[in-house]
Length: 502
Image 1 (cartoon, one colour):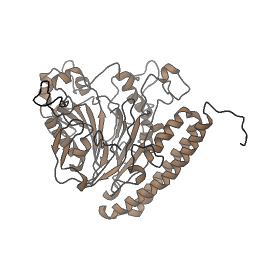
Image 2 (image 1 turned 45 degrees about the horizontal axis):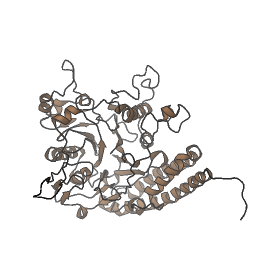
Image 3 (image 1 turned 180 degrees about the horizontal axis):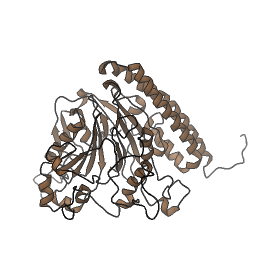
């Protein structure tokens, strides 16, 4: 899946929270409807079979309750994507990333072979299950981990045992740490702890640019990896450093630097860092240190000021505002407007921003901020994760277009507003500002109501509160849809000003 990720360490965020956030985007030409749910222990499978790869895994018998954002239709599997479990551990899976031919030759992906023909007949091909992938990761990992570090360890062990059929980046967080794991070929992996005072940008490209192999194979304080990674690198001549330069660069060894990266991937990292560090360097002149096509944009960076939830929403909704590359902007031309792939794209399925707050009780710690549809046109809403159920407005998405559902209402607003961007942007900005203010007021109000109640005592209160906010949001979203529909209707090509009363 094409996606964009930003991770914000606790000392880089505005309130000391760890924040992991990712857009899930559909491939070109597809639009995947999403819903948000709670998975209770009784609903969690004990024997798991992947729809796409047919891999089968026996799961532990002690799963925790967790939230998830699966596909509305299950024809391709669960695709749970994001969630928070009952221990306030969060996971986002996955960011599809790139690799190179040397890695694929050394450790081929575990691609499934599906059965063909009839057994015993000429030409019969027996099925060979593949590895695990984005369809599976959250379901087989999140219900069983008590920390972000445990998430890395569990997923790493599963990758080594079953392999994967795609290259993926996965985020884990708890209230203290964020870890980022990248798969290397079919069965290898690396993971690095996000520095507390930094943020990380990830645009569908293998990202980690510095890695301490000694730490990963020793104390594992800030780095982890497959047990045989050093031998894997040496045996396959993957280290491209000159004169034993340190630190080791996974991006050079395992990643890609293709022409398509400069259209699809690196511009997104450039824009995010340009926004969060506008004065650290020259971003726009011919002498700029980093351009949209630079291969050496840092993986982790200290921001110039603390990062807010609104900053996260802005960068993950961005379409190169203020540059010649903005498809809605006045600068540039038709050529520049289509040069680079936007972050806020038409095929955003949803955005999930998981905030784990250190200054409240365990009962209130996790908020799963959620948006559906194309991000320039939607709003980010808070969902407390310590709940028994999710409001119908977010939960009951189906394959049928229905404006009474938050996913479909946002898809409709985006599709209508895109053609009349200038005329509808004011209404959308007012909606985003109002609902954003309401969201922060809602969180502060609910925090006060719950106070020091226990984790279990708080759950029904939070479940009810989420529902009340969803109803208020529904009214605001219906109003916006009406405004955008009116503006789009007035701009129809078959309009005619002369009218009568008949």
